[in-house]
Image (cartoon, rainbow, N blue to C red; front, side):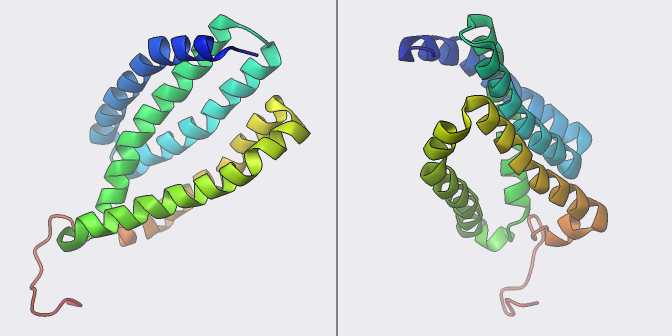
Length: 174
């Protein structure tokens, strides 16, 4: 395995810059591709980034592999972070943006933290790192397919909030 110092060197040296590049690319992609396409690309990138760690685990101790895996994962996270924040924001009603955004983002993170925090260690011990990372990629695919289907069926558009729309405060259900 890798020492904590090796991981820190690659995470700070490569990961930080890859994250910033991902943020930049995500912002450009969002403006050029629009919300649905850029979110779909983000979901695919974030799912596939787990395969880079499966490849690293299969290759063994490789500094180049570590740099590549961390770089790709952080780039995907930076890209995904930008477009997912934009997507979550678009789901909110302008009048309640802060509260609704907090609830949406907390719900999304609590489910993931609970599921991985309580099972990841045991799964890694049972399956090994390569199979664990392959499993995490496969587990992400239903979400990717679901978002694609929602985009094709119009559900993504129907779920958009009223960001930018003015509504009367007299009737909150209007």
